[in-house]
Length: 383
Image (cartoon, rainbow, N blue to C red; front, side, top):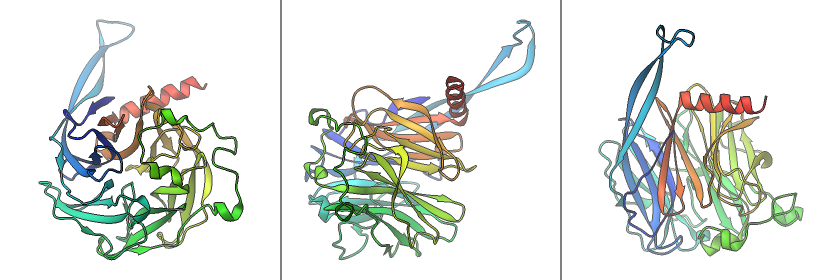
């Protein structure tokens, strides 16, 4: 497995919330927000372009029974390196910036981000660039005049359906946290928001977060330096949308110790009531991606409990319908914060970016062969 930190010298005291995508020319594009602290008015959006190099190395191994005779089989490994450009600040907003999200469309890439010192009053901005070279235009409101707390994608990349529709997972944080799907049928020019999806916590009179057999909330001294506003809500936010044959799935971050799920049968217009999955959630962001061939991958902190620890950071592989998930690798398992993963894939394997102790943005790469070897090891562990 290949791992590295993107920034040789971090331009800000804090960085968080990366989004990673592969560009048509084979490069990688990573964006994040950085400033003196999360939620500070000096927080802006930064980006860097990575140029990976993949080198195949063939190793001939002699026959195990007769070391002087080769059996004709060749073991091929892949050596990986990646050069990243110096981080560049691409915004100059009067209020704090948050959660940049990327969407590649043919020869262009869209960058969505939130702005606002109050999370409840976020507004969504969008910028446009060509994919080669990356050169950003001026930010503009995604939905002019919106005052609902933010439109469009809130943390993870939108998906493009076969019909051409773009579906993005959005959420608002005004009292009860609630999710929605924002969809566009005209390449992101205009957007339609669905009904809000929530847990109806007040109506159902559910126990306080941290009950339901969840782990005890983590001590305040062990929490990452979050914005104080983050502790005011309860419910579901920051949904990830992924496709199955004929339907869409939405996985949601929650305060209830588990990832929640909803399903749409009509390309995102209507959704079922959120239900808890068996996947633990520490009330922190995660990502899901389907790669060519149909496999699902999930990157998350598999920790149960509201505001649970943001370590370890693990990778899961799922069945095509998401009915079962298998953890096959811990990317990080030491003390610290390794959070908000973002997944993308290249021909040779799977890339993931994530927050590294808010001191840098880390990236990791696994070849498909390495993923298969990790899974075989895990299977042998349980037999």
